[in-house]
Length: 337
Image (cartoon, rainbow, N blue to C red; front, side, top):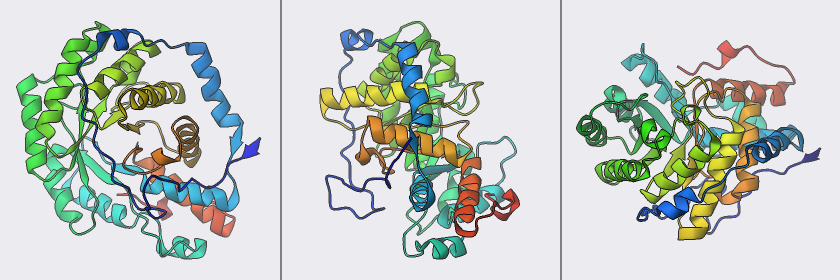
C-alpha cells in the first residue's frame, strides 16, 4: 500500500493552509431531462473502486495527524436528538470554538493554526441559541429545515421553516428532498421543489439531503444529484443520519462523480457532505481520500466538503492523543456536549 501525503494546499487563490477561498455560488440551470436520464451507474464497478480506497492508501504518523486536523475543520458539528436542550447546544458551540484540546495542539506544533469546525448544525428551535453562543467566532449555524428528517410536511410549511431559520440567523440550511419524486422519476417536481427552497434561503447556502439509503438503486442517486445541482444546490448531502443506511463510500463515489460531471458541464463547483454513520477517524480518512482522488485538492476545504458528524470528533481527538503519547485515551477525556 502506498502512503499519501498531507492534504494538498494548492487552490486557485492565495489562501493559507486553513483559509477558505471564496467560491462562486452555483446559480443552477434549467432542468435538462435528457442529461438526467443519461446518467448510468455500474454498481459492481463502483463497489470495487470504493473498496480500493480502504486498501490501496494509508496515512500514518505526522501525515495522519495533519489529515485529521483538516478533517476537524471540515466538520458540521451536529446535535439532532429529540432530547436536545439549550444547555447541550451551548456546550456543543463551546466545543466548536475549541474542538481539539490546547495541550494536544501544542504537542503537535499546531497551536497557532485556527483549528475550529466548519459549522454547528441544529434543529430550527435552537438556531438562536447557537447563534448567540457562537457570536464573534465566525462559525456559521446550519439549520435542518423542511420537516427534517422525513420532509413530508406541507410545502408552504417547509418553505416557512426555511425563512424562519434564516431570520433567526442561520447561514446554512440543510433541506430534505421529497424522496417520492426520485422514486417515481418526477424530476420536474424535484427540480421545482429544490429551486423554491433555494430561493427561500436567500443568501444562506443550501445543502440538499438526498436520503440515499431510501432512494433504491445507485442510478437514482446519480440522477437526483444532477437534478438538485441544476436547481441550484450549494451542497449535495448523503443522508439525514436517521435512515437505516446512511453515508457509504459507493454512494459518495456516485455523488462525487456527479459533482465532477456538473462542473465540466457548467463550470460551477458544488460541495459534498456525507452524513450519518461516520464515527471513526478511519472513516474520515477514507472519505478524504475519496474526495482527493475523485475531485482534487480544491474540494478539501470547508466551502466544498463537510462531514455531518457528532461522535466523529471524539475519535479524532483520541487518535491525536495517541499520536502524541503513544496511548489511547478514554472517550470521556474528549467530551463533545
